[in-house]
Length: 210
Image (cartoon, rainbow, N blue to C red; front, side, top):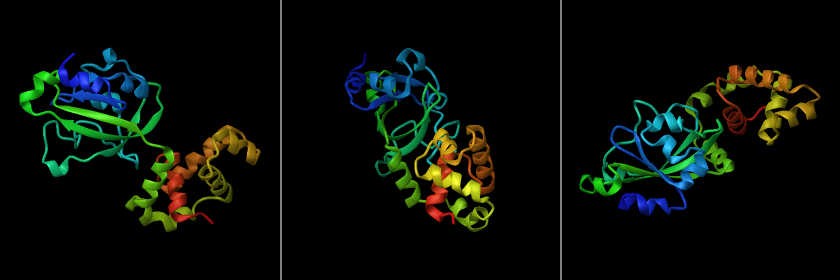
């Protein structure tokens, strides 16, 4: 193992590195625990295929137009960021990611990696606080009209979700089937113009449903 990778191997954060092509060169044991992938499984894989990342509003982040530079940027642009990533088991989690850029002269000591990323999972409550503090402009603009499209039952389903109830709990509390709950959510997404339950809950928290 290369010198710099040895240092990150002992990090308490999940760490992986990529080269300028965006291919993963290294991942530590914490990355395996967090993401569910072994180092052998992801080595050489395009990082976008592993992370499948979106921003906290569900907009694609990872891909061919990844905004993260693959070589050392200006110091002022070297900031951490939040990303929703997909684990090996299909579960999406929110992580905060920081980047360490390797100077060209040290690449051979870093396993030919250009950037090391450290990842730490963010508590869901923190996600809600961030999204409420920085609402999506598209949702806010259409809020007045869209919230009035919900039926009383759809509003109640959303209130239950905002209170932290899961699908089975909502079904039990409203004396309906879990499939009916899921159908209500599909209708809610379409009427509010959102793509997920978390976005619908954020809409509720930002605009209220009466």
